[in-house]
Length: 334
Image 1 (cartoon, one colour):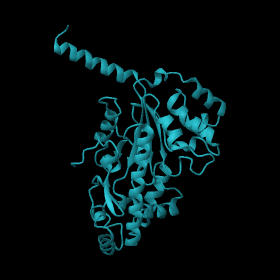
Image 2: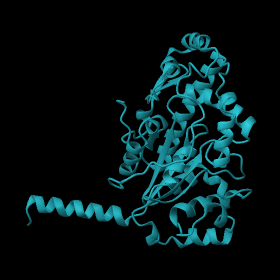
Image 3: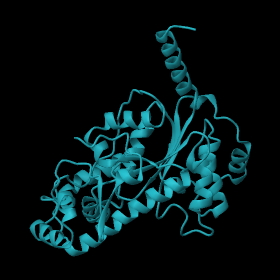
Image 4: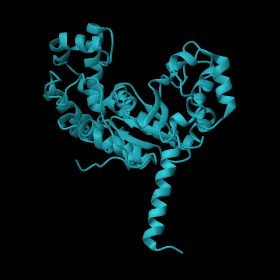
């Protein structure tokens, strides 16, 4: 039997070899206005990512529920080196061949991450016939080998609600809600003054919407956990905003990929500022209304440092992100 140091070294080398040879798979559940386009852009620019589809339901447009299921299954279970979301997904015969083949991932994805993000409310097929089902379809997908369910959340729901109002102004000026392409970034710069102008907000309505969004996060985490057989991995927009290098490294490590070098490169631009005092025209009135409706939201309203909020403010009580998911990649003590 070897020395303890030799044994430890062999185990370490074995773990590194496993991380190098495996293909890692992730399904990232998200909602609108959470920074998911930015996250997808970051991941696509990482050498540790072999393939990542943003808003994967767009792979199959005007497709039936069976084709939608097969497309998503193919992205995880049988990725191909030349996989392109909008092209191959139109070929139903090829998709079914990929899904039925169940072959090991090709060597081009060895040691890399493949996967997609998908919007929980709109993109799960709830408006399709038949819809994708949590207990059946997602349970099958999320329990494939090396697949991890991830929830990418924006913990400050107050800022998320206000962000939607600013994005409406951006859309009116530039006909898009995402500043990723060069044309869209140029349009954002050209209309920055109009887009940055403070908006008036109804405080009571803001509290109602924020309570609803808190409930949606709880429901999403619970569904993803039940389908995947374990709590979903949590990644927070605010943590990524504060230190994208550190959070991407933690994300890869939490997926079992070890210590990876990251570039954290992205061309995506942020639309709404971090301090709502400059974004909300009637800030003091909103502050009073939120304080009367639910003081739980006051910290989120006043935050100007992209703080991670573990507490989820709900109508009639509170919950916590860490109660419903695995928050191991995120340090709360910023």
